[in-house]
Image (cartoon, rainbow, N blue to C red; front, side, top):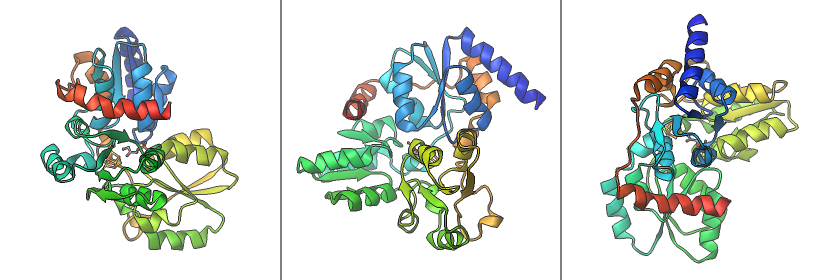
Length: 319
Ligand code: 13P
Ligand code: SF4
């Protein structure tokens, strides 16, 4: 605890000294989330992180999350320095959608509007017409469908299928998955629900269909958090990375939060639902990157300029 207190104090000094602000995702270490809020930064979902970083007046953004989040910030604010506590923090969706293969896929379907999830590399975004996050994907696809557009969607197959079924849009799907959400199990969730019949089930749409089907609320991390804060239920079963429980407990202290079951027996797999890449973010890494200037995100031109359009289109749409 002493070490954590020391590191937090040091990080606060460094943030001030470097005119830096901390932009954190709900899945990262609770100390980093607290520090972000104590120092005027934010804890947010992917869309809000992008917007906060773009609008922040500071010269340096420290993005505690995974690589695509840092890249999105850099694409939107090339003049700002964007640092990450660990540059190796990536995402299975990003890894599962290499830019070359994706370009081949797009080339084969020139009649389709290309919509990519935020969880992709800058090079993939450079090929896209639209970027979306989980909080606005439904609205964007509904909008495109109303214009008679056929869609090429990448990379998350569960989110893509969910959007397709909700909107009825013509969507061709890339076959990617999040290794964390893909582990949630519908059958085990049904059994858990039998034990907690009054619990409200909150599901992130990167989860499999059998899990999404049982949801009372399907949404982004911020939307799930809001459902806990404003919901009437006393108990909530939460199907997303368990890093979010930190903020849920803070903002809804009276509510009971239950982690949704992952592969097989959740009792034997307590921390399955935690992203190994989000977990690479630490207080020490934050202090190190600010002290040494390591962990700087660069997105070379022309990729940056080409990727900017699909992100701005989304931000204008939700504005
Ligand atoms: P949101 O926070 O946008 O819901 O996304 C979750 C995610 O995949 C972050 O890794
Ligand atoms: Fe990617 Fe899943 Fe980790 Fe989010 S939780 S960064 S989608 S692997």
